[in-house]
Every structure is written in structure tokens, then in C-alpha cells.
Length: 276
Length: 335
Image (cartoon, each protein chain N blue to C red):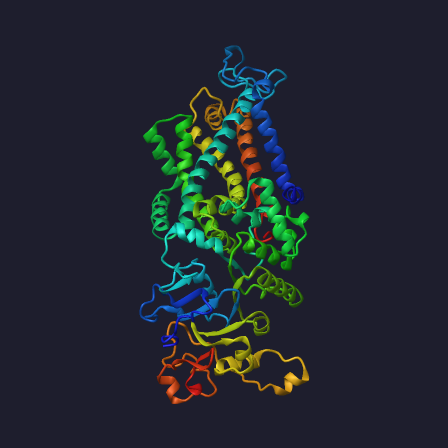
């Protein structure tokens, strides 16, 4: 509740939170909200229509309702954003806490491996993974997750190291708590603050990343309504139908902006310096 | 060297805990030319504590007091030497035995703010040890035990579902003490347990520790730099400087008739309050800082700051010897 109170004073964060809630609701109830089924049915009679009463965001070059596609796109984008964040967070959590808590040669081994991966630019690494595994939603998620594991691992390791030095860890050890239980019971709950902040920001980054990949044709494959892919399609009709680009583009902007704003707000609210 | 002709505790007062020649050197990495040797945090320290008594360990910051405390709990491994608890060597023992010993050895830390997990309630904090050793039958019994401990340490039982940040420093230290008592230990290391508290709170906590010690027959190693606190609570006192014990004896002997110049200087640095005390006091002001622990002086460790230093002090380390019965010191002047 404390968290919510301090978050409420932060106007941009509230804005972000509201947009995110709307996006989530829209994504969950996409089938009920959207006037046209799934957004993949084509209608050759109504191609490239500008926004009107029947198609409030207009239609694309296959006569598909853009409003429906944008709504279903929210579902895909949010799913990719959260799922990849969870995957990479989980891997990083295991690697980072083991490295930070045990230190020594384990730490050395894990961190040098992470450094090696970090030498490769994230985008390039993801490209390589997609190239190796092939296109598609699942592979795209793996590719994005892999490229963000190193950053998370470093973050978690540093947080864990700072916690591992506190007296309450020593006290737990003196009370006969095993090393494994110390990580589960004390280290992880206390490192949640920065992790929540980073995860929120990361969702924004993942959504952008996924949209980027779909834009260049390596991500979600047509006819699935993905915002990045819709942008790519809209490029050809930029002069005849600029709204085709406007709606998915705005959606990407709003989604990533909201997650970033919320992340910033959470960081202020969870500032470890104010706690303890 | 200091304590090299240390004799094991006499049979009649069997030691509950005994440290034999413990040393802890921290290696200095990366600069082999300027720091050829390691930091000698603890350099050949020996003592024994009889059951039901309190040994006060005093010395200025950085002399290795805290390291001694941690070595005893086996939270860090000594470079050399061993710690005997109830007649058994616990320094090199296996995990299972260490687990059993941990139940009987506990610690209270200096900083009551960083020594409590901010995400846990008093029930979880105090109950952790009870749960680890399965000392409670069921959840209700665990909660009852925690409440009982809290009351014993002067906290109301309805505060037990609160989080550490809702308590004051003194109350937090009470929680720490309750936690240390949770596994029913026989020996507690109080590592500067009252140094972070206000003077008024210090008195409460010291009294609490003393009452608990007397009621439960506990044995303490009381680490502190505060001489008045140590004088009040300790039966025996050891004075540490630069990783070595310079003087050891009953609290009465050490405080009334200090043998070592360093002890004298420490005592003279404690504030005097009554006119009587003030007039009786001669002020010895030590010059300079404690030498670096990487290259401690040859001869007596205190020779660089000692007001009575002689040539002998700088070349030969003084022998550790019993000056009057039960009162030991390592100084060339008191042989």
C-alpha cells in the first residue's frame, strides 16, 4: 500500500499504469471488443478504406479492419513483452544469484561467460538466434530473451552481492539456515525491488524489439496481426493510406512509453535508499 | 610471541569455549611489491571462557575484535588455530556437526538496522532458528514460543506481527536478542551489541543481557570498545591491540590495576564523571594511529605508541606471563 501511495503522486507513472491496464484489458477481451473476427479475414470489397463509422481505424490493403488488428496486436505484443521478460529474468535470476552469492570460481566462470555473450551486440545476437532457429513467434521470443540475459544477470549479481554482505544473512547462517534456504528466504525477496523496476522497463524494450523484428520480417509471420508487421505492410501505402501506419505506430509508442513511465515511477517508489 | 606459552584452562573451571592460537590473515591481492605480507587481523589469540561467565574483549576499532567473534561462530575460517566448544574442536568439523554446534552458539550484531531482514515479521525473524531445528510442534507452538521470547526480551507479544522498520533501534536490538535466544543456546557472542544505541537505551539492553545471562546461565563473549559497558558486564576482560591480546585478567584486576601501558591509556581515555574520578585520573594521550596490520612492528606491537618505550621493546616481543594469579600481560615492564 505504501508503494501505491508514493506511486500515486507520480503523474506520469499513473498515466503509464492506466494505459497499461487498458492495454491488458483490451488484450484479454480482444475477441469481445473487436467488431471483426480475429482481424485476419480479408474483404476485397473494402480495401484501403479511410477511417469511417464501420471501420474506425480504416482497413488495410486486404480489406482487414485495422482496429481489430491493432486490438489483437496488443495481445501479441504484451504476451511477447511479458513472456520474454519472464524467461530472461528467470535464467538471469538463477545465474546472477548463484554467481553473486557463492562468489569465487563459480562467479568468475559465470560472469566471464556473460561478458563473452555481452561482446555481441544484442540485435546481432538475436538475429543470429533467429537465423539458427528459423522464424516464428516462439523462436523470436527465445532470440530476444537470450540477448537480454547478460544485462539482467549483471544487475541481479550486483544486487545479490550487496545483500549477501548484510548482517541478517550472517544471522541466518548462525541460526542454522542452509545456504540454499538463505537465497530463497532472504536474498531473493530483498532483491525484488530493483528486479520489478527492471522487468517493467524490460517489457517496454521487448515490445520494441519484437516490433522491430517483425518489421524487418524476421518475427511474427503474416497474417498474424503484429504491430511491427503491420507497420511494414503499411510502408507501401504511406501516401494513399497514412492512417495504416499511424495506428499501429501509435500503439507501439504508447505501450513502450507507458511501461517506461511506470518503471520510472516504480524505481522512485521502491528506492532502496529510502527503505531499510 | 604473545600467548605462545599459553596454558590450557585449569581443570576445575572447565571452559565452555576455548580459542587456541587462532590466527586470521587476509591476503592482500594485486600488489605483491608494496604489500608482501597479509593483513594480520588476528594474530595468535588464545583464551578460554568458563561456563556461565562473561569475557569482555576490548580494543580500539580495527584491532580484530569482531574477527575473533566471527571465527568463534565459524562464520569465517581461521588461518590457523582452533576453537573448542564444550571440549570439541569445531573449526574443522563437518557440516552436520557444525549445524548442531550452531544451535548452541549464537550472535548479536552491532547494527540493529542491517541485522534484521526488512521483509520479515518478528515471527519469521525470531522463528527462523526454531523452524530450522524443528524445535516447535506446529505453527501455533512456534508462534507461542516466539511470543514467549519476545516477552522475555521486553517486547509486547502483540508487536510480533510487525516488520523491523516499525521498531526503534532499542526494540530492534531486543528482537536480535530474542532471535539469538530462539534456539536455546549456551553461548552468545555480543559483537558491539550496544554500541549503535543511545546511551539511555544502552543501559536497558545491557541490563537485559545481564539478566538473561544470570537467569539462563548463559556464557558471553562480549566484544566492545566501551570500557564502562565491559566493566559492568564482564567477569574477565581481555585487551586486544593489533590482532593480539596484550592483557587479560578479572575485570576487577584489569580495571583497578592495569598492567599494560595500552590498558592504562585506554582507561585514561574513558570519561571521568565525579570530581573524585577526575582528580585521580592521569590522562595519557596516545600519539599516532595504530600501525598498519600488513607490517606490524617488530618487537612489542604497541612499541610505536607506548609512552614508556625502551630499546628492548622495539627488538624483542615481550613474553606473555602471569603477573599476579589470574592476571596476564605481555609487557617488558611488568615481568
